[in-house]
Structure formats: C-alpha cells, structure tokens
Length: 279
Image 1 (cartoon, rainbow, N blue to C red):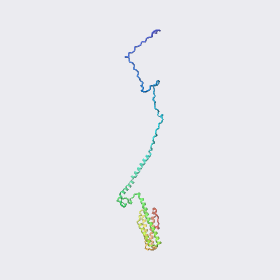
Image 2: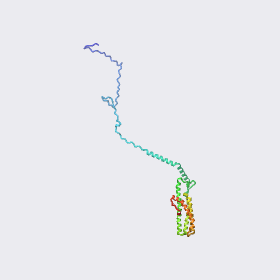
Image 3: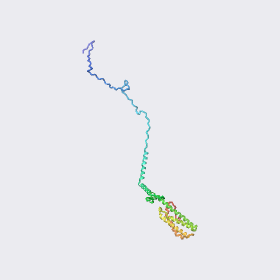
Image 4: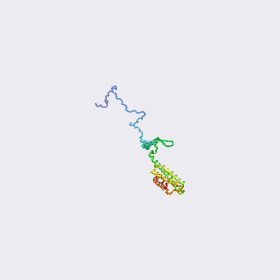
C-alpha cells in the first residue's frame, strides 16, 4: 500500500455483505441455569457471595437439664426365693413322714385294729379282729405300760405289808394289855386271814423275782395265821413261847426271804424298804 499525503481520503475497507438469515443458522440463546427462588424467599442482597447457612438447633449439652423422676428401686427377690425354698423343704419332709415305710405300716396296723374291733354295751372291746390284747401294743407304748404296771403291782404289795405291820402291833397290844383276850385274838386272826387271801391274789408279773417274792410273802402269812390260831386255842390267856416257837420261826424265815426280794423293788418304786420286824 502506498503512503498517502495529507488531505488524502482514508482508505476504504470493503465490508462483506451480511449473510442471509435464512441460510446461516444463528446460535441458540444461552440457557438459564439458575434455580428459581422458592416463593417467599428473600432475594440475595447485593454483594453477597451466594453462600447460604442453615441455622441448626442448639446442641443437647448446651440446653439446661430437664428434671426427671428417679427410677423406682429394684425389688429384692431374695426373701421370696427363701420362702419358696422353705415351702418346698417342708413339703418334702411331710411327704417323707407320710410315706415312710415304718409310719405307713403302723398307721395301717392302727386302722386294721380299729376296723376289726367292736364295742359291747358295757364299753368293753370285742370281736374276732380285735388286736387290742396286751401282746399287740405298739413298741413305743410297751415301756410306759410296763412302768405303770410295775408301780401298780408294787403299791399293791406295799398295801398288804402296811396292813401286816398294823396287825403285828395290834397283836403285841393284845398280848401285853389284854392278856390274850378272846376278842383281841380273834380280831388279829381275822386280819391275818384277810391279808393271806390278798397276798395269794397279788399280780406280780411286772416285778423282779415276782413269783419268788409272792411265795415268800404267802408262806410268812400262812405261818402267822397258824401262830394266831394257836393263840386263839388257849384264849383267854397266852400260849407258852415253846408252843409257838416253831411256827414263829417259819414266819420269821419267810419274812426275811421276802425282804431280800422287796428291797430293790421298793427303792425303784419309791416305797418304804421294810424289815422282817415291820411285817
């Protein structure tokens, strides 16, 4: 290009014709990629960065503690367990007592005894199935019954001995004061005969050496009765010592033998221990 001088026209630049809009496509308008504001939202103030913050609720530890009622105390179940265990133990003990072999046999034996016995009008028990005889007592009841029989029999013997001692004193008074009067001797003789019958009827099965004791007592009374009969044969008046010495000696020997059997029985029964002169 050639430089032009002053006053020359500026160069002309050719301008192309604009394209035909029907042939040249125009670029599509830019899409709006912004998000529409929700209704009621506050528009962003000028100068804002576009960042938003969401307010959070206060932290739990930043709030004051709310009072709550204390938890109920736990129930102690130990007493209930102990009560239940005790009830089970008692039930087992009762079961063992009821169904223990010895207990069941004794109970059944008592039931059979009651079922097989009958009662008569006078209150005595009878019947073919009666098991209330002396040999059918329960083992635990034999000892108390034996003790009762021992005491009863010992007291019966002691009663005869007491009467014998009273008759001996009466005879001494009749001999010394009444010179063996007929009425006095007959009174003594009647007492001796009554005591002899009582001695013969004594039950001494529960006494130690009961048979020997009873035999000695009967022999002593038999000799005493014979001696009193000799007194009655000469009454009024008393026989000489020689006329009754033999029978009196037999009575004394039998009494001393009896006292040897009676001493241990009297101590065990709590009764007086007598000598030959006392009876």
